Length: 531
Image 1 (cartoon, rainbow, N blue to C red):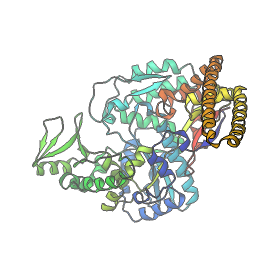
Image 2: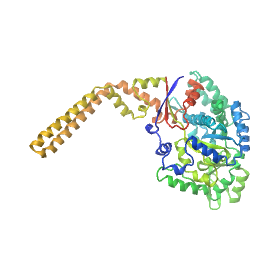
Image 3: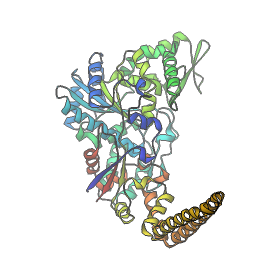
Image 4: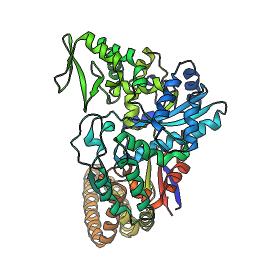
C-alpha cells in the first residue's frame, strides 16, 4: 500500500461552512469567541490554565480502570490510564456518538488527529505527558443517526425497537447484521479477520457502548488511545452543582443565548439552548426535562418531580441526568485534564458559543482544532484521474465545468474560436476607425454590429461544444464514474463511507497511513492517492 498526499485549501473544496473556513484563518470576527489560538503556542497557554484547575484524577482513573477491567488491551493503553493520575499529564480529546461500527470515515480521522497531536505535543513539551482520548457520546438517543452504515453505496440499517440512550442498548441482533456485511468483505485480504473482530467486539458485549469501546480499542490500542464512557455515576457526580444551577436558575441558557446572539450577527448559530439542558435517563428512556410551573416533567412520559424531588433525584442518582449539547462539553472538560478538543465544523461552531459559560463556571476552555479531512483515492480512481488529467483541486469542481474543461483541453475548437474572436475584434476596430472619419455617430452602430456578431459566434461555440461532447461519451462516463466514486451521494466521501471496506482491504496499515499523513496545526485538506 503506497499513498501519496496532495494538499489543497479547505476553501477550494466548497464543502465547508463560512464559519469553519473563517476559524481556520482565525478571522477577527471569531476571535472574541475562543480563548486560545489553534497553534502550539495556544496549547501552551491552555496547559498553564489547566494546571490551575483541580481535576478529579482519582475518579477519572478509577472509571477508566473499571471500563477496561474485562478488556484485553495494550500496555500503552494501561500506561496511559496510570499516567492520568499524574498532574503533569494532559489529554487531547475528540468526541463522537457510538455510531455503528464507527459510522463515517471522519470518526476515524478525528481520532487519528487526536493521536498525532498528542504525540507532537509530547515531543514539544517533554516535561509533560499527553494522552489521546475518544470521549464516547454514548448517551445520544438519536438511533436513526447511529444505526446504519453505507457499504458499496448501499445503506445498511440495524433494525431494533430499543429506545433511550443508544450506548446502553443491547447488541442483540447485530450478529445477523455482521453476517450480512461479512459476505461482501470476506473476499478481501483482511475481510474474514475483520468479520471475526466485529463479532468478538459487538456480539460478545452486553451493550453498544461496550462493543464500541472494544472495537475502537482494537483499532487504536497500539497508539495508546483511551476510550472514555462518561455515562458513569462518579463522573456525573462532579457536575451536580452545574446541573442543579441549570435546573433551577437556567444559567447556562442565559449565557449561551447571549453569546449565540453575538455570533449570529456574522454566522448561523449552531445551538439554541433550552431553559433546561438536561435529559432524564432511566429504564430505556432519555427524554428532556421541562419545567412547568413548580413541576419538572419528563417529556413524553408521565414522570413528574417537585423541586425537592428532582434535587433529591439529582444528588441521589446523578447518573440519571444526561447533558445535552450545551452542557456536554463542560462535562467533558470538567472530568478530563484536557488542553485541546478536536471537532468537525459543526462542533467548532457550537463550542464557539460556550466560552463565556466556561468562564462563568471557572472551567478551562480548551484549544479548538478543526479535525482533519481526507479524500481517499484508491488505485483505480488514481489511474482514472491521471487519464483525465485532473489535479487534486480539479476533482472538487462541478462535473459540467470539468467536462467542458476536459473537452476544451483536448480540442482544437477552443484555439480556433479564440483566433476568430480576436480577428473579429480587429475587424470591428478597423471599421470603427473608418466610420469615425466619415461620421462619428456611426461608431455606436458599428459597436452594435460587433456585439451581434460576437453573440452569434458564442452561440456557434456552444453548438460546436455540444457536438464535440457527443464525441466524448466515453470521457463523460469516466468522469461520472470518478465523481460518484469519490463523492458518494454528492457529498464528501468522509461523510458517507465507513472504515470497514478499507480495513478489509488494507488492514491496520490503513490507519498507519492516515497517521503518517495527518497534519496537526497546518490546516489543509488531504487528497490521498494510491500509487
